[in-house]
Amino acid sequence: MVLTPLADITPPFWSHVIKALLTAYRDHGIDDELRIKEMTELAAQIEQRTLCYQDFIHRLNNALVLIKRDDLIWLLPNYIQANQLDLLFLKMLAAKNLKQGLNDLLKFKTLIFFKQVELKVVVKEGFVSIGLIYVGCEPEDCLQRYLDFSVMLLFYICRAILGQKFKVESVIFPVSHPSVDEKMIENTQTSVLFKGDKYLIIFDSDLLTTPSFFYNPTLRKRLRQLVEQQLISTKLYQQLSEQVLAFINQADLPAQVTFAEVCNALGISESQARRKLREENNSFKKISNWWFYQAAVSELISTNKKIEVIALELGYSERASFDRAFKALLGTSAAQFREFGKRFGYQRSTDFFTDTVDNLPPIPESCQSILQLKTEELNIPKAVAIIEKDPIFSGRILGLASKATFGSPPTSVRDAIGRTLGIERVKSLSAVFLAKDQLGELVVNLDVDKLIRAIMLAPWLHLKIRKKIFCDYDSTLDEQVLLLGLLGMLLVFHKADMLNAQTSQVFNRSADFFQFMRELNTQCKVSLFSTSAILLAAWGLSDKLVKTLSGLDVQIQENSFIDNRQASLVLALSMAMTAAFEHFTEPEQLVSVTSLLERETLEMLLEEARNQLKAV
View 1 (tube, one colour):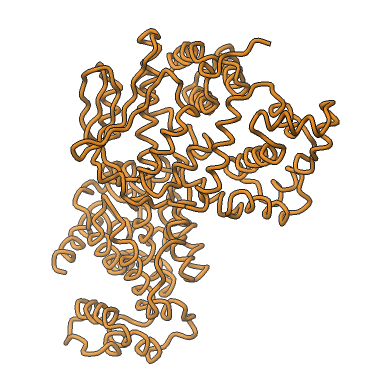
View 2 (view 1 turned 120 degrees about the vertical axis):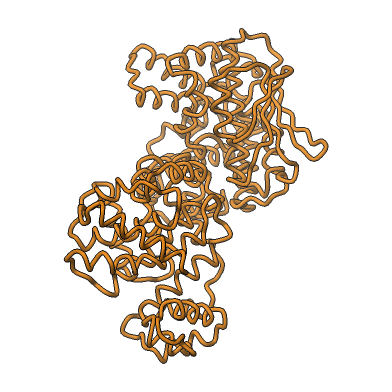
């Protein structure tokens, strides 16, 4: 058998790119059956390690021609789930900082890049340059698309490790391609220069040691062995290791396959097999672990199957056995790994928000005590006793009560709660203060103070709306929705979220807040009130509140409300945010939200709300 030289074989990573491209074809209405069949075969050839890089670059170029060039570089990544790309990617994304992640990339670069591409990282005079230099002689047009994508990939790796903290100083290309340059500028928020023969991304050297939000030392330690095993496996083609792996893959119950079974099926003695595997720097245990990782991780991250189902399909008699095997290999439970991996999909999922909430600092004792009180346990003496132990909490309650009263200001916490704020509102306010304290400094591209002012304004606006329309009112639940429904904004604009910039663009171009909520769902795949519910559920607030908030998201997307009560809540919150943020100037969407108010009445209320904010 004549084998393709190792150095010329296309790395398996690129099969994921081809599969993403097939999905892009579908979404762009490209139904060329012959081309789709060709691309499917191309992915299979890459996975079988029978495709040389020269053929791949030509065929990739032909495939990309069907998609507009100006969309290519920044469109295709939206179809690639980073957690499904490669062991190396997961290892980099769990790095302590960018320096550690880039060291991984340099050490194992052949798992992604061809030998004809030199990858260099240079630190000089306070800046870092990550460079790609092509040393082959492929035709320029074919090569350009491959290198364009590779530069995008480098940018994505850095952004995935550091989130929005990763800022680019400049990007350098050998020649200008206006459509690609425009997309690069839009996504990196920097300038593009043209000189030399290099593709460079340049950024401040301080970013190398900036801590990563997703650092996971246990996972990195476990993945190191698997990445090294993957590097070994790329050097093997139809050797015994490949045959053993193929046998395990094809078995009905792979997890139960024994070494003796494999040797018997392949017609080789166990001693001969061990010796042959040692010559290939391998062993049955390493191959079994490799199979387990590939199969288990693929199912955990790319499907929504229950872990019990995955365990049975892979040949385990029960989930407990599967969990033990998984933890022994990766040092973390299957459930934890599923959450970790899903953070890095380009399409944001609730897992990022759940993980962020799970990693918040401990709740201060005063807030925790208030939040844990059930409705029937709430009374003024108990609340006062808790709040007075916390001088900061006490000061906030007194300050808010002073702004809310028209008589003499309250002189005590008891007076503030009993005469002005009310016991139920104090419980909601404790959650607002807690959210601001724990998340406020982690938010970018959003004025947190304006958000808090909008939250405080919402109940006042709702009262004004109720005076103009007839609707039912649940004083406890509705007050909670009005004060707590917008807290999800602190998660949506979290600086570690890789889609923060996209969210910010949607926010800034929306005519009013109702339009923002709808586009946040359609473009960013995020439901605002459901995101708030994640935070509130973690803090133990009522199930009824959580369900109400999640239900509002559905009604917003359908623009169809169950009744005037639900509509009035959404209208009050939307008007409060529209009043607080000056760039929301057109109330057209608000007028159509519920048909509760005429445009003239709505504009009058908005003006009153803005004056109310100025007076505070």
